[in-house]
Image (cartoon, rainbow, N blue to C red):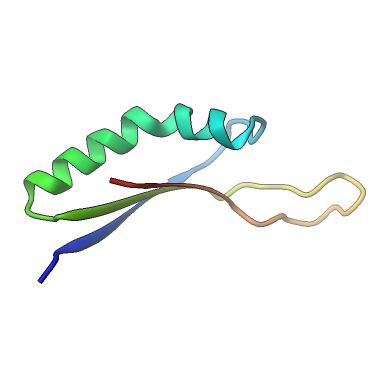
Length: 74
């Protein structure tokens, strides 16, 4: 049986600007560190997601937008 896990890192503040590739690069090292620790703990498949929970929609809407998610399958 394959041992799988999901690690979620909630981010606050900062900027949500950037392309999807830039966001993947931004959190890549941190994702590899989390993955390494979880692999050493015995998990075979690790998914790491970074979720920026503080998102705002354009000022015209003045409402909260969906969280920004960057995912790694390691």
